[in-house]
Amino acid sequence: MALQILLNALALGAAYALLAFGFVLIVNATSAVNFAQGDMVMAGGYVAIAVASIAPMPGIALLPFVLVAMIVVGLLSSLVAYFPLKSRPPVSVFVSTIALGIILQNTVNVLAGAAPRAAPALFGDGQLAMGGASIAIQSIAVIGVAALLIAGQWWLFARTAIGRALRATAQDRVMAEALGIRANRMIALTFGLAAALSGAAGLLLANTFFVSPSDGTNYIIKAYISVTIGGWGSLTGAALGALLVALFEVAYPQIPILIGLTESSTAVTQVVFSQTTGTILLYVAVLIILFVRPQGIFGELAQRRA
Image (cartoon, rainbow, N blue to C red; front, side):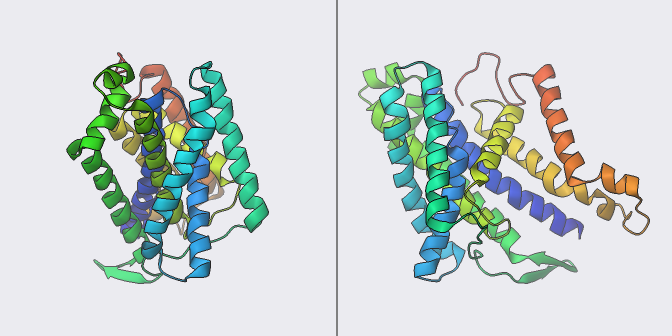
């Protein structure tokens, strides 16, 4: 049981990390917050559902379709919500991305309805025996796919010319342009990559947690909390923050089971270890981090780009 709870938390944290990575990539490249990033998670889930309705296939086979479709959505979002306003006050991009998110929500609501939907599992809904415990195949698959996507993103940024251009643009756009890098293209590509990561998270989450048009607001809050905990601009911090959010959501309410209090649990125990209390403690932890280390766990006082 303990192993299953841990894997469930890791799976949720891995999906949240993909969302948080996309969030940080755009912050680093533009110094602007894309509040439509949570809606990209929702959109990725619905892309998977739409493709599966045409050609039924497991989730892992849907992943390439989701990535390509969300790259296109991300590119279009940069053209609509960022580039026309990049020279305006920062609040302009702030509002435009919120408006874009609302447009996505209502478009999906019109096309697919408001009822929650489920995407296909990555490899199946079965259980796998491991160490005397029964482990959900979906949880293991989510962790594996998220790890591969994160490794692919690291390889792109660390080992390719495009990745170096992306990092140069994020670190110093003016210097990058002076070196001949087409910064606007790199920023547009960053929006595409960020949307692809979030869309993949939507596919990974939509089987277990379902997806509905209004889910984007919840996901952008999770991304915001993750980067606040880990440190703005830090990919490592975003991953740690996402894992902590998942632990509060999944593992904390299961503490009575882990320590054997299920049979003797009281009303007080049920309240203390409830999902609601876990959410309260998560936000208390965020406030403590803001007071003690406002730059986040992995943030830097100089606010350098990650």
